[in-house]
Image 1 (cartoon, rainbow, N blue to C red):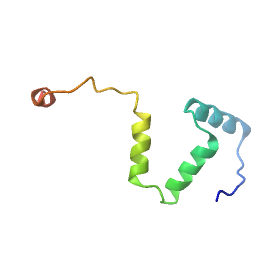
Image 2 (image 1 turned 120 degrees about the vertical axis):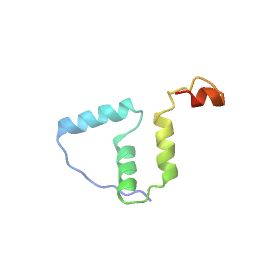
Image 3 (image 1 turned 120 degrees about the horizontal axis):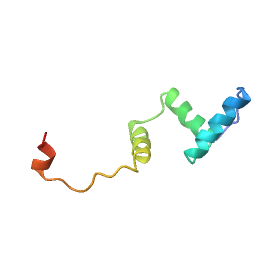
Image 4 (image 1 turned 90 degrees about the vertical axis):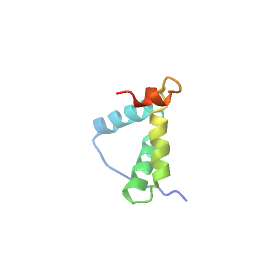
Length: 73
């Protein structure tokens, strides 16, 4: 069950945070819930791994590499 809470912050800070959230295709509520979960220690490493992979989804490896190519210095 979700419960509402009230937070206070400067209007300019809230506006900047909303813009940043929109740029990340999310909401302040979603970001706060994610932060609260991490802060309270209820976040799992698989949750964090999924988030990292989502943020890095733009990166491409360029294909498969041979063993020799991977070990080149």
